[in-house]
Length: 299
Ligand code: PRT
Ligand code: ZN
View 1: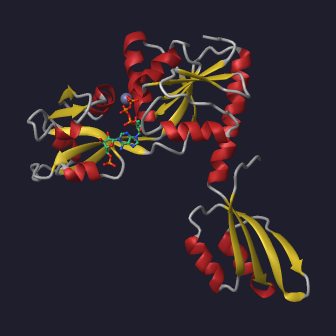
View 2: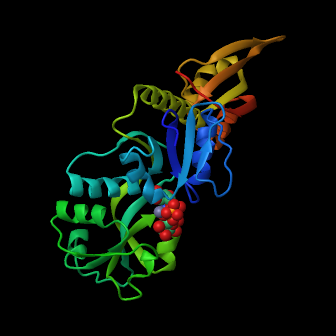
View 3: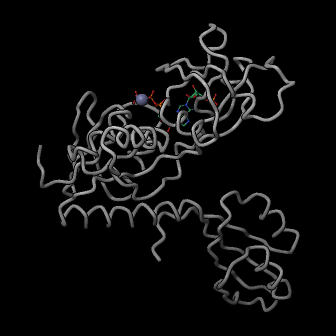
């Protein structure tokens, strides 16, 4: 392995893979991914991408085999608790949170669970809980003074109550349809998660600089993805109202040749879902509304 190049570990094949590759590519890290290859070398920057299972990423980063990694906060926090238990020191650090891989680690109860008990903590008391995240669940129970038995399952956690392996589960939820299909009801949330960028604690100064540059690029790409560039024509008399709807600090306003009543307005809008705003703008007299994506936004 070439230690002069920054090693970034991402998930080889799973829910985070495509978004990781797209994000890196939008940050100018061009990576030719070759099927079944463990390492892909970036053509235009001193960066190599390691394609591995997501569960291995925290360990690879902690040991410095990989300098940086992208992994779900759920995996990151579970592994952090494991490291702390074994070594009692803080391992890798989180550089920035990403906007994808959104989910939550939640308890889920069978729909017919005894409803006479009052609070969620009473629900959990003395139960058997199946989960792939025993450290996060154990930590949560301890902080809330709950005594329960944790059963580790690597997958198909949602089947545990039906199989008689556990009373309750604690698993990742996004749309909730898996719980519904298994007659389970979501309860207390242990952790809200997105993908995060993590880094080794002792990087060389060159690699530290490269990671800082990468984080700045990621932030620029992520900010841009939440913005739209709007061009529209507005009646001069409705300008104040239209600017209020757009919630913009400083729109550019230009005259329209041969029309004294109308102006052209250019503005960066924070609203990603533009439909509601577009209807309001129309009612306020705006016309020729053009909505464009923003690729990068540098402060
Ligand atoms: O092979 P490898 O070990 O790399 O992958 P993996 O199978 O362990 O992970 P993968 O690809 O399933 O997920 C990678 C990461 O995506 C997770 O660690 C989370 O950070 C994030 N993520 C986001 C999710 C979900 N959403 C998600 N819904 N991971 C898993 N799920 C599963 C969940 O476990 C449950 O089975 O989807 C089901 C629930 O989904 P809903 O939509 O029915 O609620
Ligand atoms: Zn995994």
